[in-house]
View 1 (cartoon, rainbow, N blue to C red):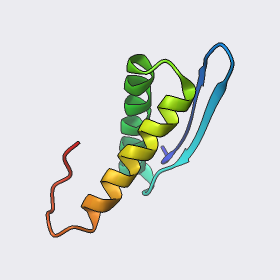
View 2: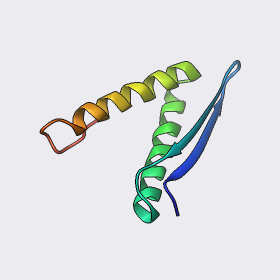
View 3: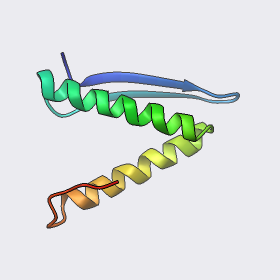
View 4: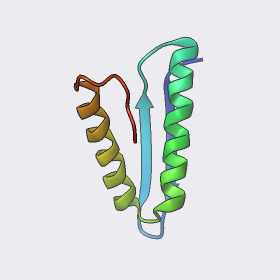
Length: 77
């Protein structure tokens, strides 16, 4: 088990390739990998354009980073 995974999505004119290294080793890293793949799959079902998928991932990443450094200990999306 590891925290590394890859994911691909193809549209008519683009191919999105994600190579991710999630924090953690063993079960925690594998769990975060499963979450990452699930989020990418969910986003790609809702959003069909590869550029829009990238924009949504960037939005989620910024949201998570801002919440990680806030005094609140919960992350809500």
